[in-house]
Image (cartoon, rainbow, N blue to C red):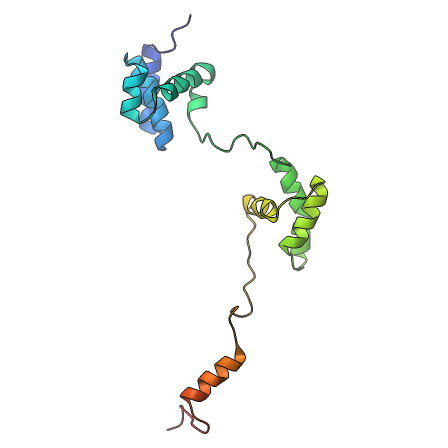
Length: 171
C-alpha cells in the first residue's frame, strides 16, 4: 500500500498552504499537512473545525484526486437536475440577443415561454430567471413612474401648500 502522507507531501502542502486564499481550501490542505505530521483525524478535526469523518473524507479526496481535488471551488460543479448544459443555455439565449441588438423589447415571460417549449415541460418562472442571471442578464429598463404614483393626490398636495394664484418664484 502506497503511503500518501510522506515528507514529499508535507513539503508540497506547506508550499500550497502559503498560496491558498479561501478558508475551505486552507482547511483541506491543513488536514493533509497535519496527517503528514502524524496527527489523527479527531485531533485534526478539532483544530480545523471539521468532524473526524470529514477529515478522513478529505484524506480520501487527496488520495484519489491529488491536490486538484482539494483546491478550487467545490460547490456547483455538478449541476444536478439541470435541464440544459451551460453551452446549450448560451446557445438558447443567442436568439434573444439578436432581438435585443435590433432594439426589440425582451420580456422574461416571452423567454420563459420559449424556454418551456425547448425543455418540453412546464417549469416555474424562477428557473428562467436563474438561467438569465447565470448568463449575466439583468433588468435594465427603469419603470416610467413609481408604482404608488397618483396624479390626483399630487395636485391636491400642491394646492394645499400653494394656494391658487400664489407664485413661489415671484418677488
